[in-house]
Length: 259
Image (cartoon, rainbow, N blue to C red):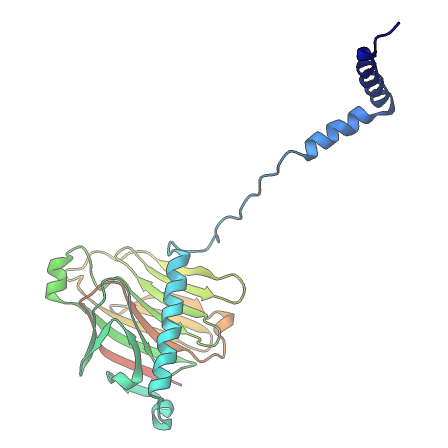
């Protein structure tokens, strides 16, 4: 006589034999593989992106848009202002949206420790911008390793937030394009190698030319970059935007000419 306690063991054994015969063992193996969690791999960074962190890009974009809107509400430009094609030292507060700049009669001086941003409120489709950047004596004493070479000049298309920009550092001259159409990305278009050391690295002259299809950049009288104008900014009105990342930099001898 078979004891009742052995019946469950026999049932389990019979079920196991039936699964092996019908091929359930293979399906069971497949089910175990499907239960293994799949590790999701995040896509890598944009191959052409510069070292500027995404958070910094977003912060600068948000700040520039906000300041520009507030300035427009306070003081709209006249038709004469908008119609002018050439400006010599246009250092008048009503012409600017400023954050971190102090405007004087013939220049502007950066005041903020991190980012000082100034947007000229007259838009241009094609433009030539010339300016001089000088580090103050006090700033040179406080930060001898810094210089006005750490500077950005952008042409910002306000409706989309796209811009093309020059960035100068002690090591190189960079031309970048920021596109916010789908996934925000900062693309490096051109990079110019460093120049030989200068006797006075606390002063710099910049000439930025945006023609209908070209971007030309000269630093201290020498052409450093000649590149195609990005398609996203073709036939678009853009606002000149000046960015400095340290206090005590003076922007002077400014000339803006275009249409």
